[in-house]
Length: 478
Ligand code: FAD
Ligand code: NAD
Image: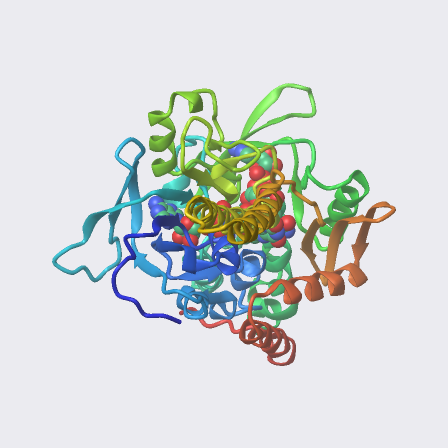
């Protein structure tokens, strides 16, 4: 790779925000020779989120699903600049991104600005709390590596504290009550992993907790996993029942305190009731919310006034009402679910689009030069020759410009539900296949392994799986 120190003034500056599914998939396929590429993200690695729930119990170690961003960048043809920083504001009119180094170590300069000609916003989303009081103070989220580490530590802390000498029976029960709020795939996968941890390891290593350890999943809607087909929802609920995970459907959490949640449900008499559910561990997984930098950008663009869930984009992923700004992944609203699958396809589409745009410009420049050459041609033969070249180039230009809009191709939905079972709704040639069970679990494992970005990650994940099976998961509290 080239290590050119300064941007090339002849090229446009393309700034990419984020190092998640959308941005990294764009970077992978982007021909970086065409632009001065700058990547800005507070996370200097890519995180393979589908296996993050497994890190909360130590089935997989977190470093096995992280890939340094430098590893992607060093394989690019032309150098890419990376700044470990958060974009705090995008000034749409001035075409500038303000960035801030929020890491522990700061130099003399920790806030500055980066100008752009083209901008891709791929900053993902925040955790939704719907303003419910006490969630941020007392609950744990499951989005980043640090979250998984916090959960892993809290599980062990609850177990060890529960068996502290002279603990009252009610307190033991509370500490060992593991409550998950949100029955989307994040909540379901985490609940399944946690019950596995208890069944496979915790109850052997700490038998005293055996009678009181309990996992409850709370969901406001009538069922969990609303995006899966009916039979897979039923299969999941049945599997959870067998595994003694309690599902509390139609139960809406309204308030969280240090030791209990307050939830509203309909009682046997048909009346609404509020109950207090004591917990030791609370994992909050109720979906996505806008990041402040995205909300602020939206407020600068009148066309975004009616968009609630993120930056509204057109079929080429251009942010509506803005020129030269594109958005991908969870921060973009393009009528698809906020998933890794969508983000990755959007990123790859933008790479093709940008590669094409650069090619178009290059051909147009060549065409201009040829027209001049044709005018100045000394004789008919040369003129004819140049004319033929122009015709050929015009044909190429038409081909390059023929790029259609973004079309999402849904490969299916997959989720692990614990006890070595998974559910899958897969799009197949003949239609949809809905399957659940142990075979699906092996499919789940191989699908995610093949989706891992590097051989290094693949090997690390396999080794972790073997380690957990042979020696059990590590129950030390770090
Ligand atoms: P992200 O991958 O979240 O990346 C956002 C990036 O932006 C990060 O690098 C972040 O550090 C950076 N960033 C944040 N703020 C700023 C800022 N101010 N300035 C600059 N950079 C910033 N989807 C599936 O399809 N299949 C699955 O199995 C699956 N499993 C999941 C499991 C879990 C536990 C979770 C939480 C999600 C899962 N998803 C899954 C959803 C999937 O992870 C997201 O849809 C996907 O990560 C979205 O990609 P993204 O690029 O938009 O955002
Ligand atoms: P989600 O939005 O899919 O589900 C959140 C759930 O929380 C909803 O069912 C909602 O009804 C419930 N909820 C909201 N407020 C509540 C309250 N106060 N009390 C009780 N329940 C409440 O969120 P997620 O599971 O974090 O997923 C986010 C995105 O990531 C989704 O698009 C999902 O498809 C994707 N994802 C996919 C996978 C996978 O494919 N295996 C895994 C994880 C996440």
